[in-house]
Image (cartoon, rainbow, N blue to C red; front, side, top):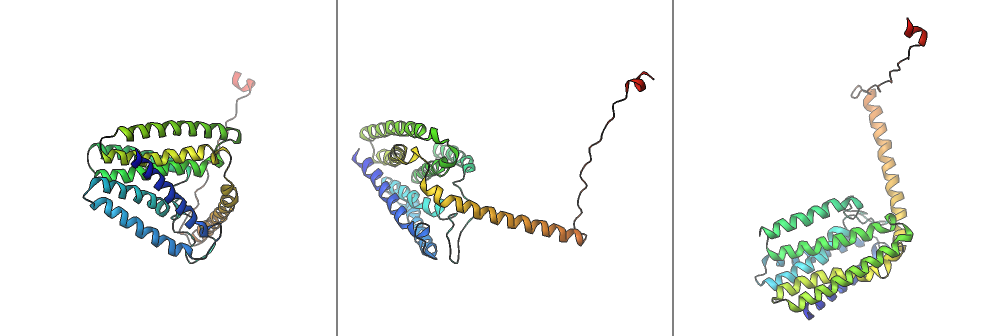
Length: 270
């Protein structure tokens, strides 16, 4: 059981380090900080994932997979789409996997992981990596969207349910870790315990009200996205007019509504 607890605590430490190291990206912007931060994350993630795939001792490979997921999320899930105020590269990718539509790929990921694990198509340490990454993704998917999707009066109700269910899950995982016969099972329990503890913390505190971070930073970001979208629309309209003028595009005529007249009673009689 102690191993599971230590693994969960190590995950919380990694999360805290991630939060602190990402402060210069938005809260205290430093120009081009992302150009240094992303390569560091990529190097750490690459090393951990490589060791996940090559480590001969399976229990140790599980830990590599776990920490690879912890560093893989800020690298692949956060930094890819995080816009910064200024710098050479203000955003690496416009694809935000934390948007509400990301649930489709999360569900597909869990189903595919189940199939890959049951059929032994992938190594167990890689399955641990994917399990942890998908768990974090599921967690982040709710955290990123609840402020704008959940009614204000329902937030504390849902948060309390999440905290209670997660607390029960913590007890179950601790029991399983205590009764587990192998180190590998204890490690997996610790990986899941990290997520359950995070849900207890968030459900009993932050998720009861909208995120102040969301109100402060997401509003301006959405306005910027709207401005960029309007620029694309303007360019699209100009491009269409230029192509029409050069005979490269022909505007299709809109179908007109055919009106049918109802015969008058006198005409019907005739």
